[in-house]
Length: 124
Figure 1 (cartoon, rainbow, N blue to C red):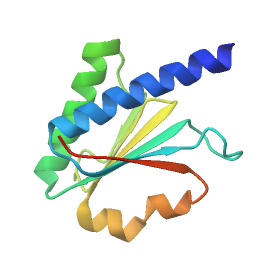
Figure 2 (tube, rainbow, N blue to C red; figure 1 turned 180 degrees about the vertical axis):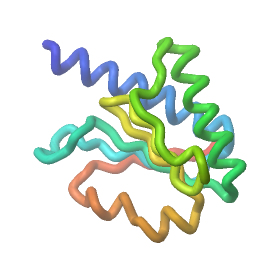
Figure 3 (cartoon, rainbow, N blue to C red; figure 1 turned 90 degrees about the vertical axis):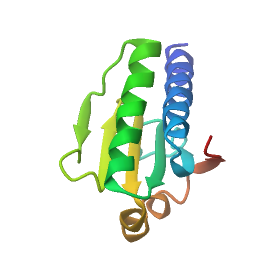
Figure 4 (cartoon, rainbow, N blue to C red; figure 1 turned 30 degrees about the vertical axis):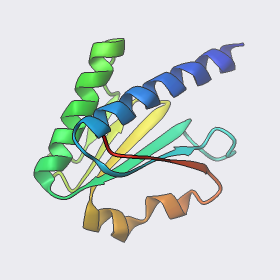
């Protein structure tokens, strides 16, 4: 029962995060479902990219704002806001990766989790 509640909460926060990304026109939005992968440290990775560091920052701010408005939650940890080429927002059960397009291609995070179920989302 606890697992189901956590899964529902993870699903909800991931939906809110995706909405926050769509609000700022994030590109190539994907959600990797890691719940059935033994070595995963979280339920979902949400990944998107942006054309500029300004857009990366805007997406990160939008995600934080939307999650806070809906759930009164702040990220447990934030990384990358100094340079805004790869921003990571860690909500424990959901981790958001916001890349500048060239960095996303270089790091290929999706390929590292090839066993994950992947769902694609359109920009708003």
